[in-house]
Image (cartoon, rainbow, N blue to C red; front, top):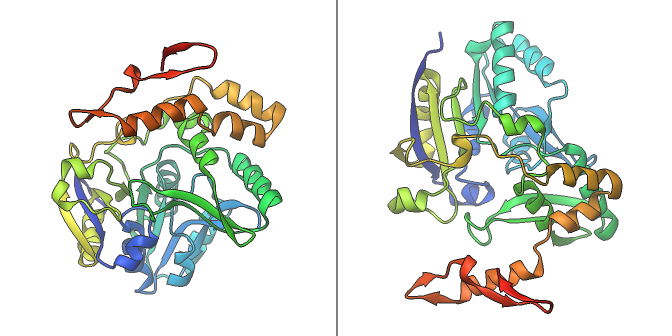
Length: 338
């Protein structure tokens, strides 16, 4: 019997600094998956396929396979045949347990499937705080365009921590060299490329039916400043008694701190991502002119904005940054407020 509990919140990160640096946030996924893999159990999670540039769910049974799945994926993951694969694995391993990790919609779908098939008691379900899922076709065409320019992509990361957790670097290794993919990331965050259903997501809340929710603990430097670490911080939201049991098991690997829903506030724990006013224009442009055109139009920062941002960083009054709306710049055609 699985019992829902009043949501508990923890901030946490891996004690192992090497594993922390490889992770997108505080290493929550590594800690949780180790708990299963080290006991001969299995994990279902999303893995990037470098051959067809798609992210797909796989069932993994060792750390080497798991390590391929570490890191954020800014694209929709394909479920494929994972429901059947997971069910068969549980049937063939009656004494084993399974951990499922996915976005809110994916995790809740698997929860309902597990309940219908009668193996919910053997499955721990963890979902990830989600900004929204962009088109997998858009990413595939973008990756293929990158490969035409630079060669085969052999590595991809959206949140490298070389400049710290708060300023992640997104790049691919292609043709033996690193190439930034800031244009794709900008398109992702300007909300043009998300699925329509993402703008009405029912899972953008702290109250969920999974066992646990994980993600970045944004604003922790403000709400729990003495616990902040520049190399990464995770949030754990516990929803069931089994989620509590799982956290009790993994916390030996963590530095952690009890928190609450006020301290951990972030936009996608309160409401879905808002639909961009440019969404229709973006997709019309994409259909007519292709991926390279939309990446240039929607994925780059205009020169005027770059100048304004530079001034915001360089100019301060009394130790406080100037309001960007008060900054003026010179335009060759006119002089006006930015």
